[in-house]
Length: 41
Image (cartoon, rainbow, N blue to C red):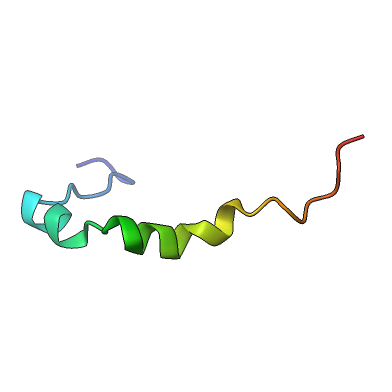
């Protein structure tokens, strides 16, 4: 393995780390709130 290569997760690890749609919305909804941004000039 080269220096800097991340280990590949196993199929089991991927399945256990998967998020539900509700979890995804909870964690990422705040990242896409552009309502308070200044208008473009």
